[in-house]
Image (cartoon, rainbow, N blue to C red; front, side, top):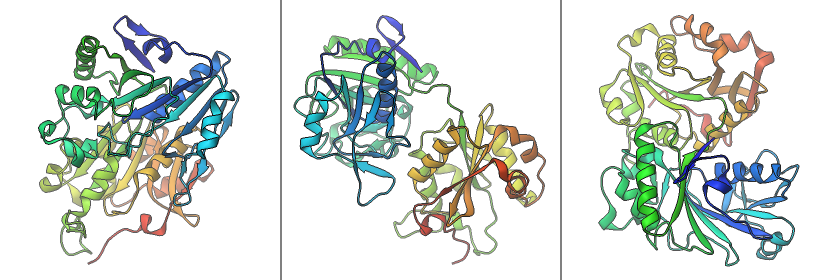
Length: 409
């Protein structure tokens, strides 16, 4: 994790955001592009100083793997509609939490894991007793198509709409009273996340900080990435679709979009080290200007060749997730669960499963790179997994529909 503000590099989130915590502090986090990451990183930082921290939400959040860890406690309710999500506790419980902890951190907004967010009329949900409201934005959105990286893009005022995200748009979205400052209670702070060593993002963050300072808004920027394993997501879209009878990746689905667009949109919502698309089709490549696109000029060499092209593009990634592009109902939250399982460090191979049966996607640790590079023809990674079942972890899909692939009309 790296943090900066106008004073230079900072050691803690509290210092970077220039927060002076009152007794029984309540901090609400809004926006997009790393709210949950900020909350959990901040909770660990505060807990290490001996403070008792409670994490909760006024909307929804993904279900944490651990509900209590030392000085950190998570207080939420089960979501009756989603087993992978939790929702807000009752209002009475929520109000009482500040008396049970030194700091309460509240996820007060939703963003479907996208880097930027424009609030709907009912958002965010910030309690009146909040001491600090911190709005988060992901600078990975810079230069990307606005419709693909802004949650609730349809609600963005017409005067702000444009084709790609630039610095002025981020400034407006964070600073406007009906944008990033909507619903603010207590003191307001901005955190610009996902700088991730990118020089253009760093320059934009530094310039935005100067502009915000003139506006009286205190801000910080940086990367909430830690020393976690770097997982590259590799989308395999180079097959010949022989059983389908035509290029199934461009087959129009019920939403009017080509099939491949489903997995592209799903991957866009995932926080990954790299996102790589391997394809033989110019039409498919044109749909993914925001991915690292690798053209496969030898698709008849089989699946193994596509995998190896993806591996080469992944560079120094610590692990590789291979996704096929004919699973249009695969959810971003499922991909995130697979990545989170891998990051626990208990297995070098992680696969999606349905009722205990292995299916796609699959993650391979980089220690299996040599074996992957030695595959030939239409041999995928299953034979590697078969030789290392003691290093395999299965993660159940949320529904049978998620694992369904489309091979025939």
